[in-house]
Image (spheres, rainbow, N blue to C red):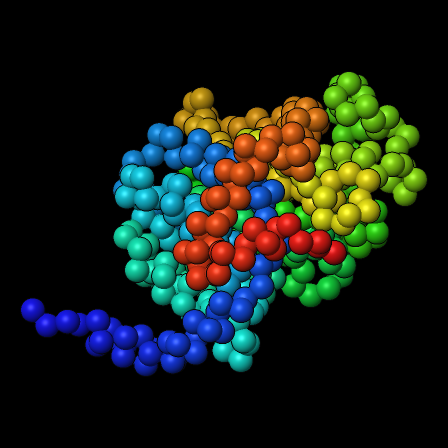
Length: 384
């Protein structure tokens, strides 16, 4: 039997360029903040845990359909494939948005190789792709981004993992993050199965556009005025006086609680605007990005969205279904906000868990062609 490895190397070189040069370049890649143990905690304890619950009663042949904002190394997709798809040979279909994926960007080569890695894994569907564009483009119905989303969706998980604040866009700009989320939740209204909305965002005073912050906080004030028991729930679970709290003057911790509730309320209403759905704040995790932060300033929120299919009681005399109890949703969001977990504190108190997550990251980074022998040194070095 002839050795075909030489032919494979030639094919690989023809597609991606000189292999030796590429490896030398890739080995010089710098580690990123999302390579730390605390981000792996979010992947493991929130994203993968919630997806396992979502797929508990689904057949192995039902694919995991994923929409997100992956980095060039596709660490999130590698991990979710490993945890959710590989054990039962479940297919994976994904659509990503990455503005660094354009042809003239230095990171394009790394992304191409990562895509090659994933597409050759068993059950990863070949139509999966990462589009070289900003996620906000999905709100343009003439864009390739929207065309591909319609072809591959609706999705089981929509993972909007942002480096900045969800409310940082001005509401007046064309194709804002709000427009994009509205377009995606409209697409998701076609799903008959429960799905996850994952949002990672910075939260803190002066991290939001003032008009966007005011519009989102209006969802909170709506319940203060009209929802029986909402004010009492805020006091009981969060220690907030919902009738008097001033977001411009309260403590950073109270501001964080306020914004989690308001964002949860806004996102729930956005989902329910396109289809009657039960929306549950399933998990909230946070940690500090800025060393000077008084409390967590980055939060990862998981919302489980379950479409409600209600037939009329009398098909010959159909009447509209009763509207979903928005007030009950709001009070449940308050209760679940109180269950927020501080990932930094958890890992400071549990060295075994931190080590296990670090080992997981070393393995994932090796798979993604990083020089993981330098990883521990990077972790132990000072970070800005």
